[in-house]
Image 1 (tube, rainbow, N blue to C red):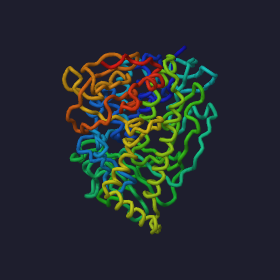
Image 2 (cartoon, rainbow, N blue to C red):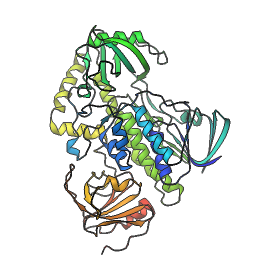
Image 3 (cartoon, rainbow, N blue to C red):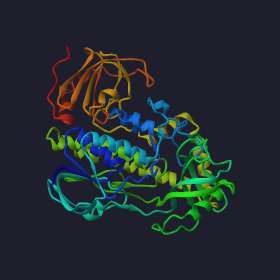
Image 4 (cartoon, rainbow, N blue to C red):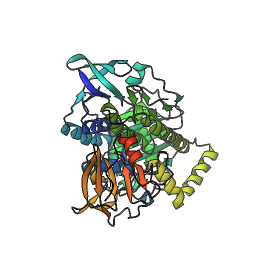
Length: 507
């Protein structure tokens, strides 16, 4: 069976990549070895920048409706007791959303279904043959064995990627130095230190026996029956990586951290992880591409993994579609832009792992925790780390010194001629956007894949300042060109990113 792209893995990364491709008319097959959605929380939240990207495709309302109720008060760094505040980054969602991963996957899979693509569940990849300009993927599922022939294959199949194994793709880095457990649990009894709302997420404790734990409710924390997502580590000897997580070990950890009043009713699921840090050397190898945990792994602290993968997919999807349809040859910029981002996230995860796992006798490490906690209370330091953790501070090097170019465009409130709208609302189509703040109000196609919008900026939660009369915004929300007078036309940027001719002169 021929297809434009085969996406391996139906987690958030694979689903977003498939949605982006299908949105642009690319024939896509999604294969997933699990027969059913996992029903597991796993990645537990959506960072501010990921919220913005989901809003750009009209998906955030559905995600928000499934989020954990309560007041989200921002992310954290290494579980330190100072919430990160992303307000200064001019975003509508400075706190992000607390939502289990399976609920995000349900929203994305529904959107993919609306675009005419069904996930082939219970279908395992068993062989891959990679040529210069095509890939043959042999899969085995409920209907037997089949070979999918595609122009590209996107590996989104996690940290233990089958695609990496079958293709012999190196995965350099370092092995883990600590072991921890992530689990969804139901409690029979709840002591006073167990968080009842997401306000208390990330409170880091360290008691006798060397345990540390972070936990948050997966529903209304006021209800005693609320299930919890916990992440727990231990400074002592750890079980083997493949040993099943047991109810007894979780019960012991809960009592050690939260006291004997906190007792376990049921272990829904549990998995072991480490702080191993690895990254493929090349995100693109001809028609083979890697994204999400298939491209990089790190300690799952601060919720960066899910968000990094979704942002990989948003960067990749439109570029791969443009490449396959012969519109613009920008696919190599996927590696150029995202590999350094992955390396930076690995570095921040390693730093957090060090801060989260000092042994009880390691006085120097505990002193460092105190210093970093004090630093996070400084607004400028907190802003920097919040931008780093969320992706809001990311700026790609696009060869232009203007501070807007390469950075995300905040979701400004606009009047485009038909009443109030926002930048994100204008990006639901997945098109590029030439935003003209000195042009005639209205939305019209500039060239294939780019909308030309005349608008004026309204008051909005993200402010009104925009140091340019016109900006060209890529489909992933990053500014490709800004008119400041020195470069009055977007011709070069249009040709580079969209393979498009110059627009007609502005009246």
